[in-house]
Amino acid sequence: MLAVSNLEVVYDDVVLVLRGVSLDVPDGQIVGLLGANGAGKTTLLRALSGLLDIHHGEITRGQVSLDGERIDHLGPQQIVDRGISQVLEGRRVFGEFTVEENLRVGAHTKPKDRAANLERVFDLFPRLLERRTQAAGYLSGGEQQMLAMGRALMSNPRYLLLDEPSLGLAPQLVGSIRDLITAINEQGTTVLLVEQNASMALSIADHGYVMETGRVVMDKPAEDLLADDDIREFYLGLGAEGSARSFRDVKHYRRRKRWLS
Image (cartoon, rainbow, N blue to C red; front, side, top):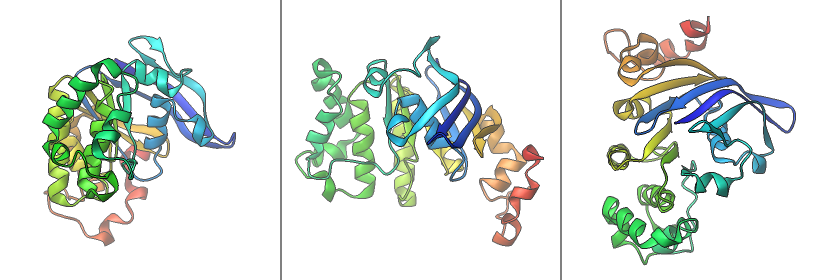
């Protein structure tokens, strides 16, 4: 299990971003992490994948552990070697490289498994097989997201960390990405899904966490979160009877959240 315990993160020795975050990602599950911009979701993923240093961030309290062993002192490559891969927000593909070259970059820690993992990725993403010789910079947004996910899978991770995979995609592509995440999980990869699209995340997650201003403020099975009145109002934009709420009603939500009172 991947576990975070009482984690605090500070940027530039000044800005406290995570304020005692704890969560568990059990093997074999999809765990959704919800929250608005600035809640600390991306910072948490950086702490899990060892990428805080390059952003001038530092863990000042708490720990990250994998199967009971602390990993928060390890570098990114060591964490990837232990089976944790992250898909960054915004896709970040190598635009001048071909699709296949991008995928091969993702296999640098598992060169012996490159052929098998490449076949797995092309089975999951047939569109990438069709585009394998095309420069990644010419792919559509949805195709680039598939490529970023495929590249992360080339290291054959136990845990896949996804940061806003639906961001900027058309609604029909969001559905495709949701189905792909489910397929990846069914093949045995555990997923931590960071999403502002609460409906999409909770529709496939086993468990969900909600973050606000650097803290976890709610923690329930995904089906319970979907039925929770606060989540329906503040993250799904629905009233108690399931009707859509107006912007006038929603804009004052920060004063009314019961979990922050």
